[in-house]
Image (cartoon, rainbow over all chains, first blue to last red; front, side):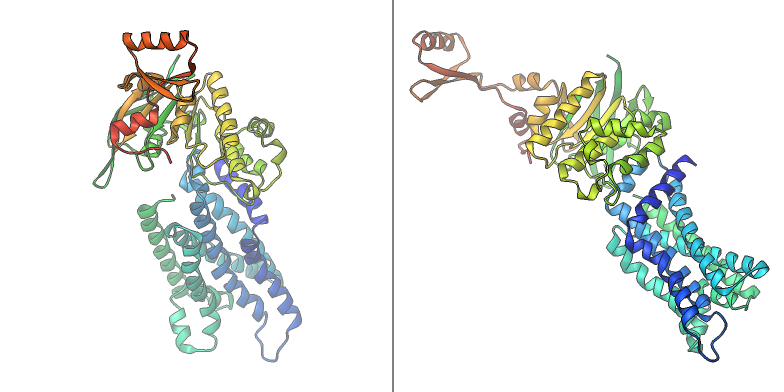
Length: 226
Length: 283
């Protein structure tokens, strides 16, 4: 626990001075507040921007941040220094993961407030977002472990992020894209947030989780954290 | 003096490449041991095995009389490790860089300033590590190794690429640790550094420890020429054999007041390494 907390606190200090990571947590919540208050179109679904950006936020911020933090530590050999100080890989990943989770949940609070959720609606929204954040963090960890440096992590995470973040939006305009997007957890999140909760959606999300955990296990065994 | 490190018959291969083959050595407290060898000789691999980060294929490595594979958190606190390629958190200050490790080791905050003072970085405590010079970054890495006041220091190329003044200051810090009874395991490919600092050195080449002992003893052992070089006052130089006839000639030169300076021609560690391996070691 001590080591997890040390990594967690390290990441707070580091992110405060790392604008590229910091902006990812701030951008979508700020955009949501602005768009929700400034744009009002006829026939626009209620809280359209808040719901749209919430899904994009989950597909982007935890994934790219996790991948970039791990890849940077590998590239700069700070991760080795931590491992040699008796920090276990699981402690490191939990420290970084819990930090990103809390940051993303802070963003979730902004989206929830913009949507005016309360009671059961609020709990449901938070659970959907939490599941999405954990899935995206796992995907980010897989990319971070697979990459030897930040550049290769960015090269992999950007297309993955685009698929996860933009497909739910594009599926609003194209039915075929919508059918394809259904296999991704971010699309299922989008449907659930918009009130279309179904057993198949939960199953698809669970399958996504299994696939990501399997990918993480394979990649970790193959490359480890160093 | 207590035996701090004892390794016997350590072997390690990566794929078909044998990196270490039957390495044995002992290091005691208040001893600076230098492992010498060219880049890729297996020096860092040996440190990793001794510190329990890497499993050997054969042989035993004991630290504090304990198998290195069974070292626990308390044992790790007694090891200070500074690897050549260890990074620092560029965006964080020197203080915050050390604070991370203070939290991991459960060390009080006031110790951070004490360690920064020790390595001469107290005035840069609040400077971002990314803005430090290469020498200052080395000091910061050294500070990290000093954090727990370890009984054994592993220093992997601690002065690599540093200017002579900074290297000399780091040498003083290493010698001070020795005076405090610490054991220092140093890897270097700079022979002059080894000759200056080390009580014992081991020469590593192609996975084998080809020579082991005190630097002066090794140099004497390979002093085949046994010649004395004499600089004369007229600017010329003469080589005199290290025997009875040479002694007579030397006495004559001195009595006639012709000598400017007298030098032995015993080899240094660099030439011994070359003689043994046919390879150059210095970068």
